[in-house]
Length: 304
Picture (cartoon, one colour):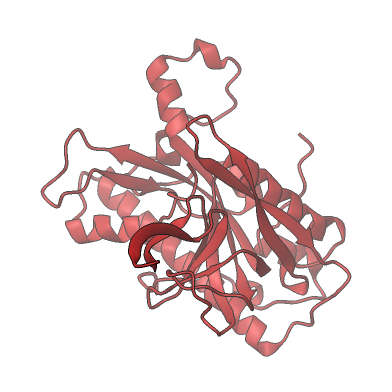
């Protein structure tokens, strides 16, 4: 990315809003693991001894945020303060195998490059399988019912992902046993949102920045969750967001470093996907290691 766009310039709102992927409100090293945030829709269970008996009990409730750091440690919190820096979009598709492969995998992920909001809505996007849009037809579909059943299934299998990059923090952190860690957490993360309601809620939150002509890192948002029962008896949790536009955060040099690291990570990811696209479209397949890398970079299991 242009060096100018890898530095937060608060004096050029339009340029920076575009670089951060804020878009306009609508009326209608790549192998380095980036810490991830997601919502745990199911409670975390553990074996607990009570009155001399061991029982499986809920130790972390459903609807809790799970933050996986770069060492693979998972930190849980029922509420998060999130300071966004960057927004991007992509398509992701899970393709199941008819039977497990030699490595025991039951399927594979296909994903597109990351795009800003304007580009995402108005163009096609190379994917890791040598095609575009994870196989999803481009353009507006006038008559859904007129499409062949196979096409409708394919379209339904492609998830639209809003990727939010920012710093997540909490003073009340639990471990996998439901015990307080005793330490606050404050780490840069990627949060890939693909649930329809969550996608909309986070989009509305970002639009508040745009309406106020504020850049993403200039304000934090507080996020909790609300559960809704599903027909299968499970709960689906959606984010409840409150953007604090009253408290403007000054951009410091360490913020510039965080922003640049997010931009570099996205650029590296896109370069990697483009190289996979070229190999696949030329008839070359992936190695097992390359498939594993693709899977590692995608976390779409959050949404039920």
